[in-house]
Picture (cartoon, rainbow, N blue to C red):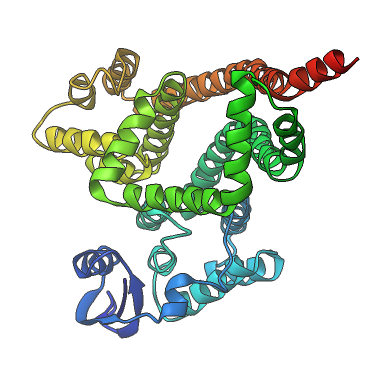
Length: 402
């Protein structure tokens, strides 16, 4: 949601602008955290086109890493923030990011802080990004915060790339099999099954199934595509509901083989982000609440919110995590405990994140290796069924005629 505001800054000057937040309460909190005394706050209704953001494009992790790294370097060299942003505006290639930088420049020129200006694009700069920049502004170490962010984004990008890369080949093969199979049932097999029908006599069971399937696909191929499309849209719609999202996220961490990979991805994300936030000087309870949204799984989100509540009541993080051994193995709670006792929690969590990232890499590589023979077996079964259903009856017919 977008809100226009009128507020008084720390110097007593009246400033006007807009802020993007999930609700009016969060918009007010964001302005107060940046040292503004709110005079007026009004929600702005967005048009249909702006909601869809059709012309906006997207900003990739790689683009965000380059932006953060270069901005950190410029600020470290004592280049003023406005000048640094203008330099990056002329260097960045991504049109969407260039538009965001121009918007940020206008906001900073209006007297807003960098974190407040960035918060107007939450779909690009998430909670962790904005929180670390705000903490850097409070401590006078924005360049260091941006460097932390660039490192974090690079590691997250590498992890995502490895998982996507390993899954691309099997997904491509399965997709190609579906398309080729549909084309065969539509254009090739009808001619072969016509030969079988003309043969007469008792056909093998495989041939009967093949003829029935070919007739159905030949007549109702459009219905198959519609059903598959509706099924995909229905699943996506259901996942967006509260109950559907909970069941989907629960299924992801309970699946055989894939469940273990998903869990390790969430643990790596938890450890890496918590390490980054603590190193950036964010209060520990706020860190946990921010990460609850970043992990991107409602099961872990609810657990982390509960952990934050227990820490607020005086418990340690390790003690709170001990109550969820299935989602947070003992290794995590023990490592966190060591970090708490040695006052090196950020360093310990960074090492824990590295461990789980390597585990994910190994698991994905192993799964990719296992999928190749499984795909070959599926192909072999399909070819065998085709031979049994079509070629053998034709061969028997030719033999009997001969």
